[in-house]
Amino acid sequence: MASLFSLSAASKASRSFVIHSRVQKYPQLRHNRFNCLQNHHVCSLSDFSSSRRKAVPSLFVCYSQPFQRPKQSHDARVFTTSQTLPSARKPRDYRPPEAGLISFLPASWIPYAELARLDKPAGTYYLFFPCLFSTLMAASYTHTPPLAVLETCALFFTGALIMRGAGCTINDLWDRNLDPHVARTRLRPLARQALTPFRALTFTGFQLLAGLGLLLQFPTACIYYGIPSLFLVATYPLAKRITHYPQFVLGLAFSWGAFMGFPALGVDPISDPTAFKGIVALYGSCVSWTVLYDMVYAHMDIKDDAKVGIKSIALRHEKETKAVLSGLAIVQTTLLVTAGALLNASPLFLVSTSVSTAGTLGLMIWKVRLKHASSCWWWFKYGGWFTGGGISLGLLAEYVYQRDQNDCQGEVLTSAWRELIYGHRPPLFS
Image (cartoon, rainbow, N blue to C red; front, side):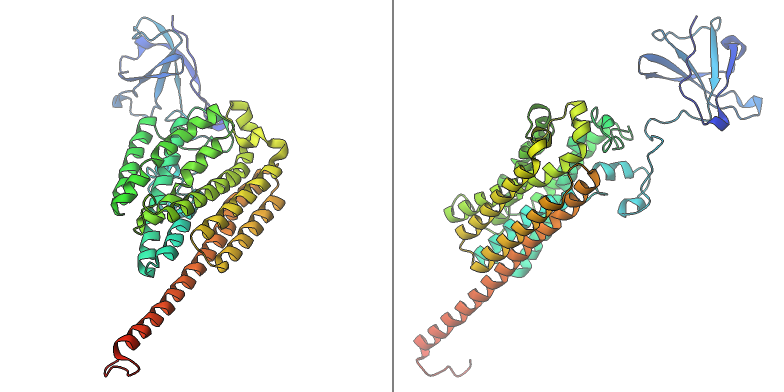
């Protein structure tokens, strides 16, 4: 005889009640589908026929043995629920977003928007900053017109938005069995089962196709420089399982934009040794910065990571975190100044960038309280604007300065040519 197991309970005001009966008493019941929950095989039964003329909630019969189609002669306990089972896809403490951009989306789109982290854009900015640094450095190096620089930056920002979303989806697919055990991640779409892995994988395919379509808008050389970054994006979640330094792998992936600005503006790093040296120094600086801010970010999950076996640099260097952060800040600032010097930047860039970078990073390291998740999140969210914004302003000032210098040199050369051609006598129409 099959045993009865109650699948769930409603609220205290409408508790489910159990009715002991024989299935044979209800010939109106029809089997319509079968599901398997954990180790028990569940038969979902349809409602009573409409002839009963009263609302009857859905009926379920659960058997502890491997499923066999129940015979009418077998006893079973039939229990009722309030319309449907409590959905595992929407935990009791999950609340759909009520503010922000994604709150205006249809309900069926929200899990995909959350999967791409559209509600948490900080990661998009962090992915965009290396692209912006590289573009502004290349613009100063090549004296590119402002409109072309602006168009390139807009394309890079769109690409950062798409590819950061794809990276988050890949990460959540890897971590779908770990995220439910971490307080900060347990309400992510895959962790709360709002989406199936297949749908998430399909969504990843569309994101990558959109990224490829955007990459095709750049010069052909950008395609060859951009594709290798996909390998780093895919392997970062694996690094969390085999090394205490997954932040270094994340830095390699998130900083790849440092290679993209120069070919986007027509400079091939391989054929230009000076540009290549500057790019490598800039890339190293961005990698150091990524490890730094993600080490602060990792402190939010340090207890849960230790429980579920996720490795991080925060766990490895928990007792000397601020010393490691200080070392990374020094490396970042030094390599950034080196990149500018290799690319013949003016003292304006070297001084402004070094002061702003060292100052903002030093302030964050001093102020952040690593034992408080809210403090780590605040500095991760806004610290990027302080440091990245300072570097960007320094590079923008350098670009304007180099443009002015180039225009002045152009005017001097024009005057020299006029004197050479016309002598001291100006042309009739000047």
